[in-house]
Amino acid sequence: MKRSTLFPMIVTVVICIAPLLVAAAKVGRAAPDFTATASNGKTFRLGDYRGKYVVLEWHNNGCPYVGKHYKSGNMQRLQKEWTGRNVVWFTILSSAPGEQGYVTASEENAYLAKMQAAPTAALLDPNGEIGHLYDAKTSPQMVVINPEDIVIYDGAIDDKPTTDLSDIAGATNYVSLALEQAMTGKQVGMPSTRPYGCSVKYSDSTH
Amino acid sequence: MTGSDSNRRISLALTFEGALLLCAAGAQGAEAPIPHGKLELVAESQWVTPGRGFSLGLHFQLEKGWHIYWLNPGDSGEPPRVTWHLPPGLTLGALEWPAPRRLGKSSIVDFGYEDAVTLIVPVHAESNLAAQPLASLGAEIKVLVCREVCIPGKTQLSLTLPIKSQPPPPDVRTREWFAAARKDLPRPAPQNWEFSVDDAKDSFVLAANLGAQITQATFFPVAEAQIDNSAPQVLLPRPSGFRLTLRKSDRLLKPIERLKGVVVLPGNRAYFIDAPVNKRDARNNKSNGGIQETQSSKEGPRK
Image (cartoon, rainbow over all chains, first blue to last red; front, side, top):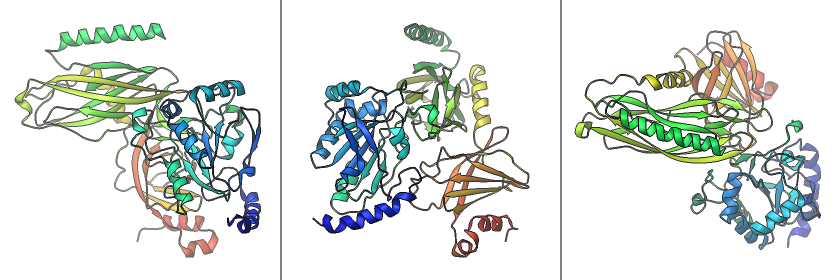
């Protein structure tokens, strides 16, 4: 639609902002670009999805907070709903080898099949590079990036920071809220929340 | 794992039997396993006296290396949550949390407790409580226990206390737990102490005027997402106190009016802080970035 006129402007803005990015992503700023290998063997680069909304989901299959959203089917439902609405959904695995949640590509593929998960791709980040780029603290931490490549949401998946499956029904889902608001031209009401969950299991050597 | 579980079951059974024997004499204790530890619901005194206050305690004992969380858990985790079931005539106060520790040294820092901790709950017994011989108190507790990994636990405990009109003696067994917890409870700062907070762009600078130089202080924010939990807290000793630089959280998108939390000074002395945040004003911004100027102006004599 308006993208053709906006695009050169966006490129300019991104080029100007990029050198200012010290490390971590921040709401309202450009999303740091990354390239990663997915469990399906394909390579994905965030920058290739400019023009689309992108969701980043930090994942650790042993974390009870992640378990809450997968055992209930909540995460899979969100993945199906939003990828069905042309949103790109990257599940990101930043656990270091030997830490909880670290999986090989084939183990992750088996998990995705078993859980009937439906992200666009599950990105393997065993060195924690994407995790640190986005200063991801927990699983399931969630980030939403708009088509202009700006981080519009960073934080918890919803407003119930518990491991209880029964809390999902009455929860306000911040990811859906941010996407709905942004897609209807509204301001994202809650752009940043505390991302509840288990700490991301980075290797100690990276610090 | 299985062995320790069955041991726990046996010790639990013994506790119940022992408690039944003790029932006529005093408090009936309750303990239950939680992941990598155990939890007891205890009373500080042997019975309830109508018209008087007393304290209940949730005493957590954890295996080495495991921890639970403070009311603000920090970057990850979740504080214990309690639902109480009390008979009419007993009124609960707010849960009292001993000062926590910083847990973790990397980019993720949490606030919590290792080894053992007692969370205290003050209870008031109304003077018309005498209608029943025993008071039965129940609690449902959800607790997240973590080391590198986290395990949620859920348990129910109940405690039966006699109701007697004479003042109760302390429970000898639990006295030390309450004493240890009280020692670590944050207290109100002395009247002549002054705390102020300056908004210094990427940081808050907490200035404390306590009448003596302080070389070590750790701040724990009550609210989430105000300060960067993992950032080192930089302390500058001052002749009359200290100045502590707290990096702001990236999640703090709006200015805050007050900074609330707990500051822990040498000797594990913990104090509540609720200080107004002085906004950076145009004058200070113009002079030299605002930081030094704003700080030094706060050191001056009071108006």
